[in-house]
Amino acid sequence: MKNIISFIENKNVVIWGMGREGISTFRYIRAVYPELHLTLADSKPIDISAYPDCDFWDTETKGIDFEGFDWIFKSPGIPVFHPEPILDRLTSQTEVFLTAFGKNTFGITGTKGKSTTSSLLYHLLKNHDDNTVFVGNIGIPCFDYIDRIDDNTSVVFEMSCHQLEFVRHSPHVGVILNLYEEHLDHYVTMENYITAKAHIFTYQDENDIVILNCSDLETLRRYPRKGKLVTACDGLGKTVPADISVSGTTLTVPHGSIHIRPSEGDAEGDTCLVGKHNLYNIAIDYYLCKEGFGMDDAEFKASLATFRPLAHRLEKVGTFGGVTYYDDSISTICRSAINAVRSLGNVGTLILGGMDRGIDYTDLAQFLTTAEIDNIVLVGQTTQRMRELLEAYGIDKRIAVYPCYDFDQGVAKAKEVTAPGKICLLSPAASSYDMFKNFEVRGDAFQRLVREN
View 1 (cartoon, helix red, strand yellow):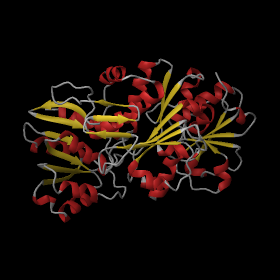
View 2 (cartoon, helix red, strand yellow):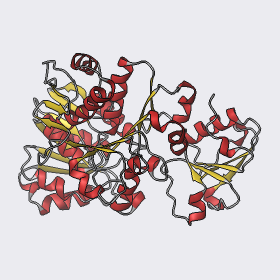
View 3 (tube, one colour):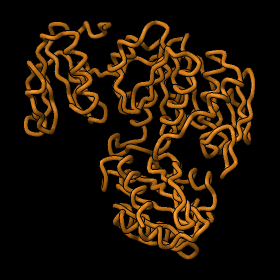
View 4 (cartoon, helix red, strand yellow):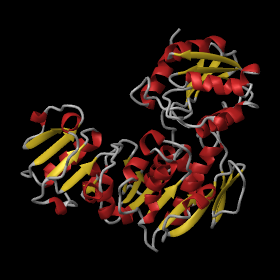
């Protein structure tokens, strides 16, 4: 096993956050340094007997005064608002991994689409060359794959804003698919959020590549950039010249173009991914496969045809009682809900709502003023605020609005009011944490409820 943490030898180390990544960090450190004493820190008690030669630091009662530690391995998502001395000693799996394997790594981030784009890229590259691994925000800690990586391994890394927030290295290829208002409960300001995302390219050199959405170029202009810029036009708004573009179902890159026909209903196409936003995701991967690996169009289309969408991302649940149900529980912002409705068409009922993080829903309300939808069911903490906004825009005059608050009751109401032949769509445009552990659990609950008689 390659030692990529030699800097912690004989040091006082704390692992902050004992979730999936924290446990992975412990396993790797213990494998390399079996006798190194460690401190494990978390706001929830853990069974310390499962971690030999370790102390436990209860951040709930003792706070987070880590002044006595040389290195702090922080898990993603834990907010840090502390003086520079703490930040100077802060590190993470992502930071250490990029230090060692950044030149092997294709890093993909963005407010929406990063899971689909990165998992599709992994699928395409794995079929092309078996020496490919997939790590990151998808749920696979990067330390778990260190022993599978050599100088020729292609690493696809789905990177969240939380993983990028404190890194001081960037991947060889950095992709920011898009930027929308998100995670303001953590970052407070949009500028802080964008700064975290921008770290995917701010530490690149002239031999690296950064792919940016044309819509975000002006926003990202203030961040230092040395890597070769590749522009991408998603085709969702104003069409502008770009290195990667989507026009109808034609995807164009500098050295070619390809026609991708999505499946519709029972008619099988080149991909089962639904919607123009997914054609954009495919276009990014088409560029990376064609320009970076010399993959020809026939191989690309053959691999694309065997890719299956990830769960809870415009996932077709089935048709029950003449109504077709779609689970888009991953939707936590306005743009994702708008894209879902546009992609599917024929939506009879849209289920909206969840945790109220103060997101501005004006764009969604403006879209709904003309959207051809019969019913809107509101659930979760955002119910009242969304209801007032829909009333302010007069949407309740043309679309039946049902404020249900409770998720189970909301799904029951949606089943009751959706006409046969129509689609019932869960695309909440809100986080799940007011009612569920995460969006996956919310999606699972939706699928269970719609299958019940």
